[in-house]
Length: 383
Image 1 (cartoon, rainbow, N blue to C red):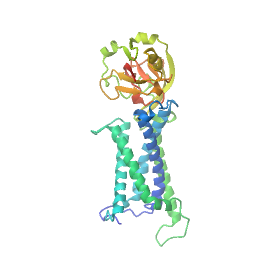
Image 2: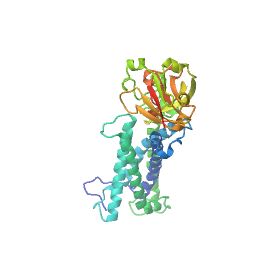
Image 3: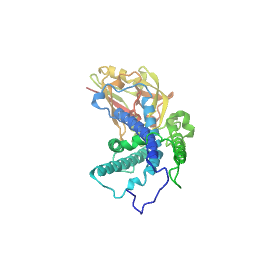
Image 4: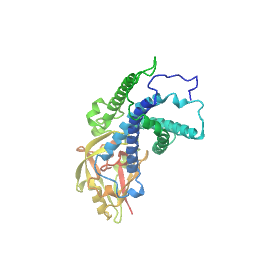
């Protein structure tokens, strides 16, 4: 069961089951929180059929909170995972690597767990800065890896349950266990020092990244890719009008088309002449940044009622954009009947800037930022 001779040797007292269990508990909390909030995010972006009409629009900042927790727990998991791997090394490289069929299944589950978790965190960190140096779709792979991690983790916990139970609580203090060997007291002291250092590392990476969504920490967000105060009209953007292929001609000739039982079209002036409403709602993106703003515009439910649509009709929203994803999105009936859902024309008291979706954009409560469609040109009622 020893590691091959060519591998570095670590004989410190903290490469033991007790330390691995303590760090594993902390890592498990971070992974569980990251997984749970990731599932919520996925369901809000791609609602399964059984949730149709039941997506929650309250609290209005729900997605802002859960996605911030997703990013924070994912970032915090990085130092936790590295320390966890350090505590179990060189057990990861046992020799011979396989001793029986049961042992082979255990080793495969560990290999899948370690590889999938490392890859999941790596691509998740690159997604935060919107850098995609791979040929596959991030969201699909990120979602699939989450389930690989979950399955392999359950197998691993099942195999290691006796060891985890044995070392879940601290062992009673005893006398020295041999000349030249550390006593339980000294091992506990070393373990506490390691855990304090780990807590400092987790706290540091959290403080310097969480400010993009946690407003009180914004001045400390040294490593955050987004400053929530920097952007047109004091609000960040992920995709500019130029990047989306929005041309001056398309905006100049803009009309809103509403397709339903009684289809109609509106110029911008006609849209502005309709009753205007003001709401305070956050824009919250999957990368983790978010900020609240004051939006003004026409209620989507009023636009649909004018088209003869039934209350709570589902909606397809079409953008002018010619480049990038989410040019066409769908809106669940829970959003279309909510009076806070607007086709916004103004932001923080000013006409929408081009990068924020001029002439009109969607803003809805508790909705992912990628679905808050900009440069809206058509609303299509779905039966």
